[in-house]
Image (cartoon, rainbow, N blue to C red):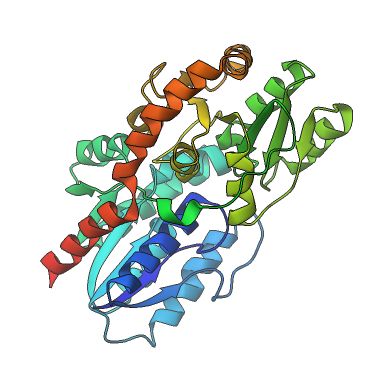
Length: 338
């Protein structure tokens, strides 16, 4: 098959980027021809509020010269205009609940505008897929017919050496922005005992607050953005991964931490409820409750047997999210449209 993937991003440690790269790798291994249009190979304006609109326009213009695709698979709403303009059967994958994400990032006025555009974009697709049960329930409640196919990872590709820098090591890896619970993370860092070291990886609008925090505490270590291999090595070397997000689909970071056999404390929202059985394969906490995050970090750091219990079950869970299983679902969907 000739397949066009359209995505706002295709590189870095972000969930959509890793999903698109993983899908591309799986499809190519199964002898399909893949092309990607993303912000990395189109013109975009790297300014908050302008990046997505500029990508929408430039990707739309780029598809005017594309022909002969069997499948056009767009990821998230900003890719939908280019999908509409492309020949081939059209699939739109929604990573989360788009208008709610825009609400959190840019405010309610922009969120209302995005909701109108989202309605148009969904009508352009032959098939709509979502990655979590929360998204499935939301879009079906609005009357859309959707298919749930979750995020995936290639477990075999994560065979990097661990990077442990401290005896008691906790890690956060993700975008440094409000919706990822950075304000909660800051409060956790301020209240965690000095002998527990928290490594922070990522970039985003809250980066200056993280740098300020690091400068005032010897046990907080901001490492900036790291490539995928280095990020995985640091996750493997950590006792606990924390993720206090206010919204999540099926988090690639959590899937990779499960595969790396690192214990997880995360917020009780979205797709996290599908991945983690509270107190069985990890710990779920209200995203604003930094006191409980601190309490559970201390508890897990001091109890190796509890960490091992969580790790054993979470590793069994993550196997069903391997690309060799999830990729087959996409291939079956593609073939059903031809």
